[in-house]
Structures are given as C-alpha cells and as structure tokens.
Amino acid sequence: MEHTYNYFYVLTAVAVMAIVTYIPRMLPLTFMRRKIQNRFIRSFLYYVPYAVLAAMTLPGILYSTANVVSAITGMAAAIFLAYKKKGLLIVALGAVFVVFVTEQLWAYVPMPL
Amino acid sequence: MSADIKSAYLRGLQNGIPICLGYLSVSFTFGMMCTENDLPFWIAVLISMTNLTSAGQFAGTALIINGGSLFEIGLTTFVINIRYLLMSLSLSQRIDPALSIPKRLVMSFGVTDEIFGVSMQAKGQISAAYFIGLMTAPFWGWALGTLIGATAVSLLPDMVRSALGIAIYGMFLAVIIPPAREEHALAWVIVLAALISCVFYYAPVLNQLSSGWVIIICAVLASSFAAVKWPVGDEEEGEA
Image (cartoon, rainbow over all chains, first blue to last red; front, side, top):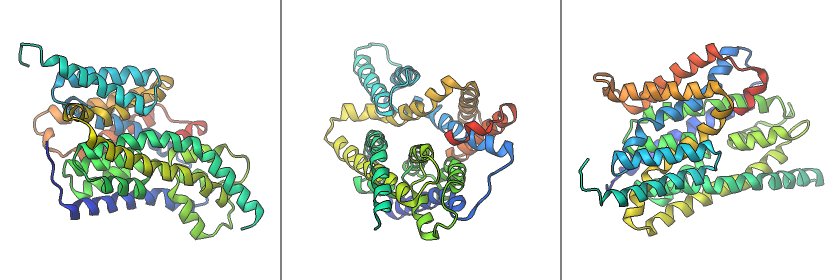
C-alpha cells in the first residue's frame, strides 16, 4: 500500500508527541519535591504501559500482514520468542521471518481463504 | 569544567554504552516500521530525536500512519508516557535540591525507562554531569539506529517488506511478555486490555470509536482494575 502524507499534519503531530512526552518527564523533576502517597494512583501508573501496549497489539496484529493466517503464525512466533526473553529485535525479526515463510508457503495452498 | 564534573560525565557516558547498544536495535526496528509505511527517513529520525521514547513514539507514529486526530495522538502518547511522572518524581528525590532549573530541564529529556533505571543504581546523590553523560550515548544510538533502519528497508524486496508489518507488534510483545512471566498481575492486565480492545474492534456500535480512544479506555479500565486488586508496594515503583 502506498501512503501519501500531508506534511503539515505529520510535523504538527510530531511536535504534539514531543511536547506531551517531555511534560511528564519535566514537571516532577523540575518542580516537585514530594512523593505521590496515594497507592491507587501509584499502582495505576505502574500498570498503564502494559495495558496500552496490549490493547495496541490485539487485534491490530491480526491485520498487519497480507493475510490473517500469516499474522497468526507470526504472532505465535513473537509470543514464543518473547516468552523465552529474547531481545526486542530478535522477537520482531523472528515474527517477520515466520510471516515471510508462511506467505511464501501460502501461495502453494490451492484453497483460498 | 572541573575535574570532578568531567569524571562524573565520563562515568555516565561509559554507563550509557550498554543502553546505547540496546537502543540501536530497537530504533532500527522503529526506522524500518516508518519506511515500511512510507514515512520519509528524516521524519523517522526527527521523531526519535524529539521524542526519545519507545512505546509512546511507536503508538503516536502508528496513529499518524492511520491519520488519527492530533488530540488522539497527543492523548494516547501522553497516557503511555504518564509513567515518566513516577520516574521523574523518584529522580527528583535523588538530585541536589540546589540544582538549577536549566540543568533540570536538560536532564528531564533523558528520563527513559532504561536511563532512569541505570541512574537509580548509582549510590547517593545523582549529579547533573553524571546523568547528562548517561543520556548522551543512548540519545545518539536511538537517532542513529532509526536512520539506519529507515534507510536500509528501502533496499529490501517487496516480499520482505510486506512481512515487516508485524515487526512493531512483535516489539510490543517483547516489551510486555517477559515481565508478565514474573508477575501475574501484569499478565492479567495484558489479557484484560487485549480483550477489551477486541470487544471495541468487533462489537457493532462500539467499533465506531477511533483507535486512540479505545486504547485510552482499555488502559484506564485494565489498570484501574489491577490497581484495586493488586496494589503495588514501594519496591516495584521504579520498574514501571
């Protein structure tokens, strides 16, 4: 799929991302001296990154390749490698490799999905 | 520059090299992902140099690719990066209270999971020179890895490029699964958030909502549930 972008939109979005990434890093370090005491807020903030990444992964991963079958095999490979505590690049490229192999093999399966 | 400041900076620089190597490979994948979606390489590098974060910039970039609204992009990125409030807060307890505002502003830019983690292992007070030294190699590693990844991918044949679409999701799984092995609360957060996300994707009416909002709803529901059921103690907080 060929994408074309409106660069004003893209650059504005990048600026927005940079600002909202910097603000939470900057505010406490620059201005605050005390610790958050509220245990709920501390716990909530601890879980947030995991929830966000999980929600982004599913079901998006299923539609990230040429077909759902190759996506499922790629996802299985990624889960296996991640479970084995392999590094980010190994997991990502392992999934890519399995998707690639599946798609090549899929071309020889006579039944359409 | 006094000898003390110089030696602290150099010590930081040295401690940052392993982080830099890790960043090279992650940002390489990010660069590939951008090019795979037809973003020019200089935008990929610009994103890495101005954001210097993993999950937040991956999510924001994914939304840019899908043409999300600026509000969605800002809110999603902010929600993901809200954890830096905790790290920045912990760090604020370990620096010289008399440290100037400009130095604090520079240090703030380098608050990433890894740089924060390594800096907190240092004994006693964390000096600005040490922390800024520590930021240096990872910052350039992040930018350089992005550039290499973004330019290398265009040399690849189409068959390979089409398989690269899954790379970013593989990376997400590599971030969330290893810690979930150790901590069952994290595993539940992941399963719950993924489940809610699927409901919003497949259920009629609910699937009208755009992806940025779905992520925020998933994050708030799953994290609140876990925060009530498995509140974290003091010892876990630096790891978020």
